Image (tube, rainbow, N blue to C red):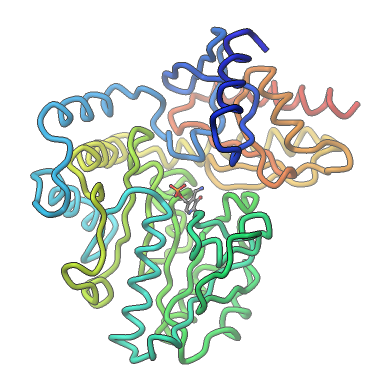
Length: 404
Ligand code: PMP
């Protein structure tokens, strides 16, 4: 470690809460797909802040939108309207095919918003007694870190010591539509699902899974709520990951890339019969729907509309996965993903994914494992084929060298 890295990390260890175990690097600036650390070393960002920096670091269009808006008006709270938010609302609803949107800030807030809406909808529309409502989630899910949300988690590490958790949630195996059908009761209001489990290990469910879930939910009058915080807005090679199966969920959760990697901007979208169960004063947040975030999100939607990155993400993702698979490395158990959301599951007896991430970092590839078994590759969608090929060379070389 260089001296600046060492000193900054020592300060962070001394004063920061120890809730993260960051990799041994301290970044100072970023541009496009590249990051530079405080020692001046350059890294290819294969992480994109958990898929949030989809349009690259310091994207000039997004910076301009941010600056222009910051100089005009940054925050009013929702006590007043601002002139950016209604435009964003109209665009989001038009683009994604919903009647209504509720803007908040982080992914977890949008998930909480969806859960609250689903419970109130169950009470007001389905007539479920308020203390009986049930929401179904999946094993291996990741939806954030609030007490309610970790209460839905199957990960002991996320839950340990944080209970008691709210009642009214149950879990079923991910990717098993029959399990959903079996779990639904008359008190079920919603099924919350990630179209691909990101933090769970880049798990792609079997083909037809989401479409079957949608059909089951429709038949039982249960809301299908898709958490596309990580998969949405082009990441998997379609606008939404649900689009791969032609599924239009009753509720849609967006975050991460919606704020262009500059600001936290998230949203919950649904049709009027669902979101209209919320009355003025029922739910809100000081920063939710602020004009600064709205201006950046509008520019994100404009970039998506003009650059249409889906085919690029699909082609490059398939190329990356093919290269990883074709190498037939003995430490690799499985290569999986969709678009530019790719994971390599390692055989932990041969190489731990945390070690792999550290080795890659030393070779100029910034990424992070999940669960110490899977290394993820989620570069900004603007990455070129040449940059991706160069990264794949380094990854294959590093993994081969680590296991011989
Ligand atoms: N949902 C999913 C699917 C996520 O991947 C994440 C973050 N990794 C979240 C929700 C939570 O988002 P945030 O960290 O912005 O609260």
